[in-house]
Length: 25
Image 1 (tube, helix red, strand yellow):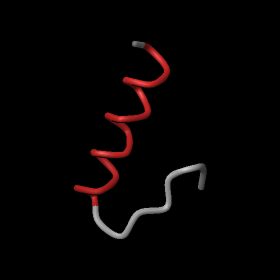
Image 2 (image 1 turned 45 degrees about the horizontal axis):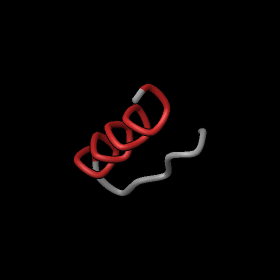
Image 3 (image 1 turned 60 degrees about the horizontal axis):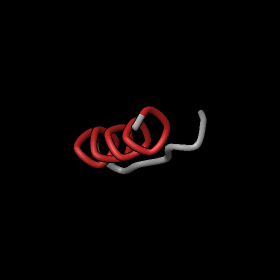
Image 4 (image 1 turned 180 degrees about the vertical axis):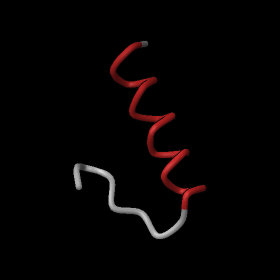
């Protein structure tokens, strides 16, 4: 499924946000 294996969509959104911040800026 990828690097994100979360229990809730909220955690997924937070993970994606942190990931994008780390990758894009």
